[in-house]
Image (cartoon, rainbow, N blue to C red; front, top):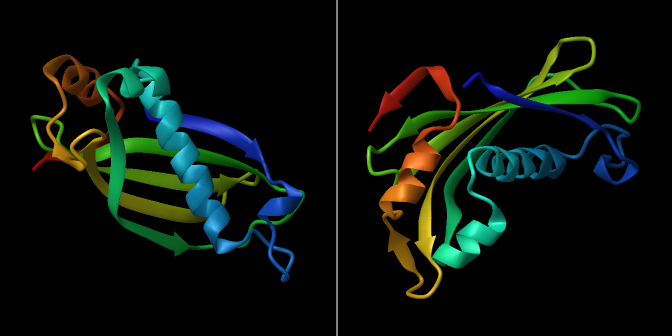
Length: 144
């Protein structure tokens, strides 16, 4: 599967007083992309609810490269860059590009799965792990 990407139009609520995209909006778009990529491989929110498991983050790092303004459209990519073979721990990498092709930001997140009943870290059930590990992987993907 190729790298997952989606386009968005920057909204008024994404801006800060400097009239460029606020720092937390980048993270919001990246989080939305992760939900979309999970759906793409068959892990819908209803499926995760049924399994009583959900994604959690340990670390979120954002590097800002260029401004994004109100009239910009952005393209965001998402790919898996690291994962344990059981799917229990993972890292995603996102890049955000303006319509002119200039990279605006790059984000890396490290996460795991939370058992929503026990409120403890969980290893996903085998069928879920297979779906999850079938998602787009970066060229530099590595097993951890």
